[in-house]
Length: 211
Ligand SMILES: Nc1nc2c(ncn2[C@@H]2O[C@H](COP(=O)(O)OP(=O)(O)OP(=O)(O)O)[C@@H](O)[C@H]2O)c(=O)[nH]1
Ligand SMILES: [Mg+2]
Image (cartoon, rainbow, N blue to C red; front, side, top):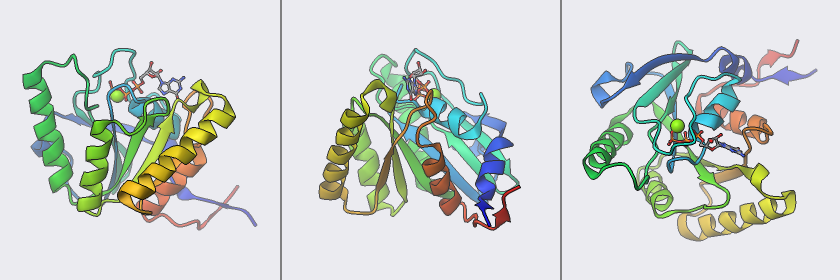
């Protein structure tokens, strides 16, 4: 008998909830939340859309597009959050500080945050900001899973090699706790693997029989 994880159904029914400019505008801090973080233009919004089979999050060729915390509802107690991208040089400094503060306030205070999905462009992994996020999640014992995005931009062998290299660097710098996979939004590569991580963090079991 085959089993279907309920996360698949929940992702299909994902719906936009609210854009929060500040932490006090976020939805009630209860249940399970998973946040999508990463450098500007790394493919956070695209990954979110691919995982939810919807065009929920706005994607853009202009980096720095997502400047609010955007919440998407999966069910009564489960949410995904599209975080503003960090590290975009052309955002004016005051705005940058504003966002950094709010991002830090969110990350540092959110009880329902169960894990961080970190998007890294496979051609530019482990930027200075990625390393800060890794340090932060290690220090605060926040589970982290990395999607190496835009894997379609490399041949399969080259993508695999890039994955192995980053994996080695992660082990050296942050131990075995951080998991990582290849991902491509247009090719829908790595969708099931990423959904399995969401299911684990959101405490969803493989209990619903497939139709
Ligand atoms: N080829 C390819 N392009 C991608 C992939 N993911 C994202 N892109 C493109 O990369 C650009 C940025 O994607 P977004 O998803 O908007 O990136 P983001 O991280 O949300 O960016 P900000 O909201 O600005 O921080 C867009 O032009 C996407 O179409 C991918 O897996 N493969
Ligand atoms: Mg975005």
